[in-house]
Image 1 (tube, rainbow, N blue to C red):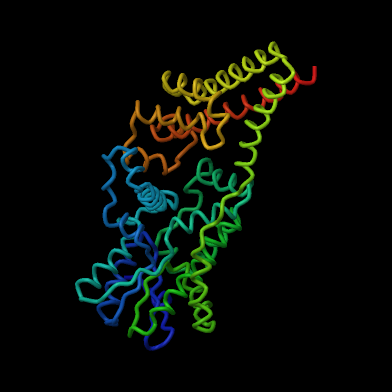
Image 2 (image 1 turned 180 degrees about the vertical axis):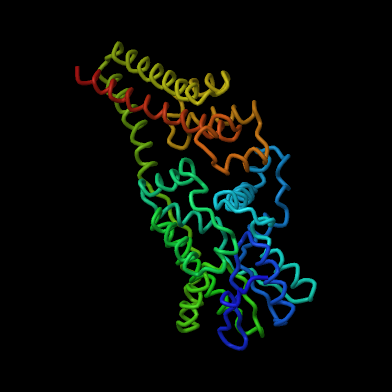
Amino acid sequence: MSDLSKNVVDIDENLRLVGTAHISSTSVELVRNQIEEWRPDLVAVELCESRKASLLEPNALDNEDLLKILNEGKSHMILLQSALAAEQRRMGISSGEKPGAELLAAIEAADEADIPVELIDRDVLITLRRAWSKMGFFEKFRVLDALLWQDDNEDEATVEEILEDSDMLSKLMEEAREVAPAAGSVLIDERDAFLAGRIQQIRGRGRILAVVGAGHLTGIQENLSRPPMETASGIAELNIEPSKSIWPKALMIAIPIFLLGAVTWMVYNGEMEELRQTAQTWLVLNAVLAGLGVMIARGHPLSILVGSIASPITSLNPTLAAGWFAGYTQLKIVAPTGKDARDFLLLDGLSVFWKNRVGRVLLVTMMGNIGSMVGAWLAGGAILGILLT
């Protein structure tokens, strides 16, 4: 085994940190040896319940209908499993181990030695939501660009080189931060603080061996150097989910209010011909552009029809969207499986939105909504023109 002593850090006689790479055979061996030799009273692992479940049952959802998965609230499992598979592919590494094997090894070795296990990572869905909400438009675009268009294997390195070279680990962290500074703060700095806070919470339970990603070692040590109460008390704030913006809903409410106001004005003034033109303009523009959007997404003919019929109605209700109906129709006609969802989330190219059944459902939904929105705004402009003439 390689000399990985630099990835074993003793904070004091009762706390040892073990830094690992998530796709490393060497890390699996390192974790098992540390548990066997150091004999901790508690093993803390950089996992949440969702990630643990996805590691224990990586193929559990492959043959299940996607709609059933969504209805049962298991959609996050697909996201996690895909992210684990993508991690190895994007780094260009073939190590013989699946991503997260060393974390499973820590749990298994602890169970074999009858040592309790504590999961210390923040729920991954909270992390992802906080990261997405903090990113601006251009930052989100850069992330999508990195996922969909940039080469995966420009600078190949062996996993052991990455694990042993602390400068390389720092470089990887900083590269992620350069692509998305706001997301980097959430994925790296916030999780360093959260992991350190969770470790402080369990410090009174004897000798603790904490198994964490090697890239978090420095940040965790820095946070553990702060007053224990301060570190542990920060967890509550880091667990807060971001609130949603009110502007999209406000804009959607403005459209039906304007239309109803225009209709009321025309009826009051007895302008029945203008009212007929208004209704015709609203129906045609909404239906045609929503259907065109679904057609561009290469949706099923029935999805195109449903989107076209739904658009003039849903545009009057800010809680509904034509794309949802078109997407649901697509979902029912060409039902994706859990495996389709995992394959889609590998994001190995823009064409996945047309070739993959999950990608097609999402594209039909998105393009149907865009077409309906454009139709509503154009119809609103045309109706305003009718009122002013």
